[in-house]
Image 1 (cartoon, rainbow, N blue to C red):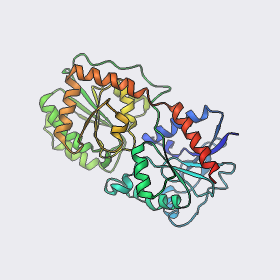
Image 2 (image 1 turned 90 degrees about the vertical axis):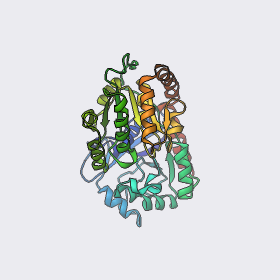
Image 3 (image 1 turned 30 degrees about the vertical axis):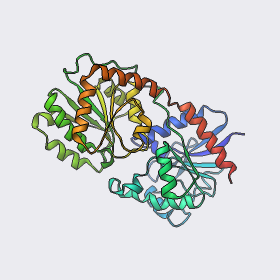
Image 4 (image 1 turned 60 degrees about the horizontal axis):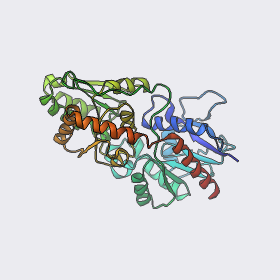
Length: 364
């Protein structure tokens, strides 16, 4: 008998981030299985989904999360009637009395609260209470799983990697730029938040620009709390370098892959990550990756990226220079990227999610 899962699709409302990418692709993979039936729900006071397709929980999410630190109200049980398991795909789920899974994408809201917005820091007591009441935790990496076990004192943790990008809009593989001196493009795909370390990337780009005056930097990502510091970093650059920096804002899936098809290298210098979908997007497009050695980045990137200390602007600049100008290195990164990305499959992800749902269902 298929397991019936109430699946939170709230991250698909508005402009989706990496979490939205996970939710959309995971839901599509789960829909293709006969052993799982999704009951989609949206937790929002503003955006009402189409009737009959998605269950609507009309609660203001920020207030609900604060309330769930102390009480099981407002409850979602009536609106999620018929579900056997509830999967909160973005750190929390409405209290229902049903077996519950929380996806914790990274633990920076506990370990590095200064990098997070207040609304994210408010997750901590709600997550603790849910786990104390029996919730299971899904994480996208073994790195985050080990953090959750230590920080939340639970063994009910299952690490399941995301799959690689796939589906409509995925471009054919890019080619290695024949003339990297023409106008090499350093691309960042990240929300403008402190955890993404973009002000230091801008600093590193200034040092790269001294050696490659034609180099460009595109920061493609939604608004975040680090915008002022990023703007200050751009203003501190040599005027010629500053003119080569573009703040592209949030970009949709098609535009992301268009930018990747133009990019010489993806820069991913995060201070902490629970997974890192943009790295796989770059590997799919045969774009070399320069990334930090922090969080789950090494676990996901394997040997298919140049990993550097995210606090060292010189190291970031040196790695970007190598990834752009060293043809042998570029070819090796692309070859290893092809092999690495092939090991991440949404089919496998969905199968393991269903195994987890069945285990959670049978545990209560």
